[in-house]
Length: 75
Ligand SMILES: [Zn+2]
Image (cartoon, rainbow, N blue to C red; front, side):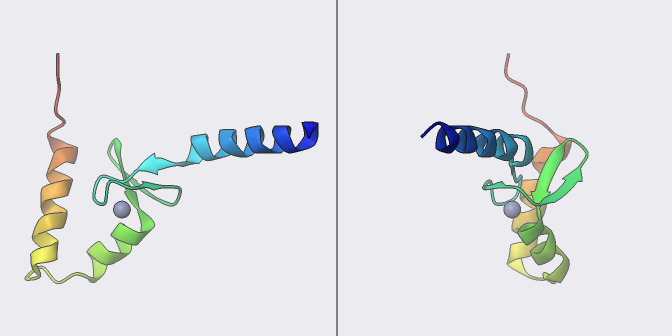
């Protein structure tokens, strides 16, 4: 029981350090790249590279990426 609990705790800690929210799909992923202060998961990075600029999906990506340059500040 004690060992199990420690393992759960330590794996949660490790995940917490690695998992970030992707700016494009808004899912929490552990693998990806950093663009300025934002995070793009490897899935989206891959899709972004493969998507044609004429594809409507590309516009969606750009829209999501715009958030990177214009962070919303609430005060
Ligand atoms: Zn993503």
